[in-house]
Amino acid sequence: MSDTNQGMASSRERPGFAYNGYVMLIALLAIIVFCVAFFVSGMGPTLGPAIGLPVLILSVLAFILIAVGFFMIQPNQAVVITLFGEYRGTVRTEGLQWIWPWMGKNKLSVRAHNIHSDKVKINDLRGNPIEIACNVVWRVADTAQAVFDVDDYKEFVNIQIEAGLRTVGARHPYDDMSDEDETTLRGSADVVNAELIEELNDRLKVAGILVDEAGLTHLAYAPEIAGAMLRRQQADAVIAARKKVVIGAVSMVEDALGKLSEDGIVNLDDERRAAMVSNLMVVLCGDREAHPVVNTGTLYQ
Image (cartoon, rainbow, N blue to C red):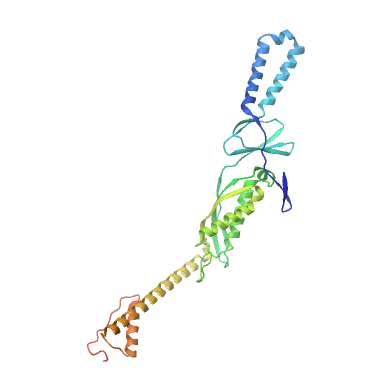
């Protein structure tokens, strides 16, 4: 029934047995018909109290015994059966079922549950405070573990989701501040979500819970550093744009000088070539429209 997992006895689900409820319902109706026929036909008064009264008492006891043993199982529901505190199996058969009244019944849902966690504030890998939240789809895979191995499996799931989210969020930086291609919370959603599913499944397996899906739904810098990080991102964007402009301008200047020399349009010495390069770079890299000065003399005046 159980094995040892981290020093604690771990329960394992096994099939339980229950009687067909419709058959027992027919038996219940048969008792009612028998009692009515027994007394309406006059057999009860004819046999006298010595026989009629015990028959009545037995019929009532049988009726109560059968009536209290019914229970209904809907699709994707399960009932954990116990006998005087001992686990006797899990019934998953849909429909009307019946067990002995002295056996315990603990009904729980094995459907998929959807939880959207609260926003939690954590520190990412670089120590920056961030706000993070996730959505998790989970279900009960082992009913025995869910009922017997944790006190309240739903509350256990809620707590472990927050703990797993904090663990995964602290493994990676919010964003990539370097040129290295590293996993980040903002830019590597698939990797982070896969890690979150693995982390939650590892934490929740003790309760027989299986996580089918998990993903981040909120990710932002904490308010106290959001302004500074926004300016940093803007500066990074400006630097990246300037770098691209400069690289393009150098390529254009190189092509222009090469074309002028190749076609023999003009021959420039090193000083004039440097001046032309400087002028072209100013025109191409400037963020404002250039206003050229027209030289009416010769190129060297």
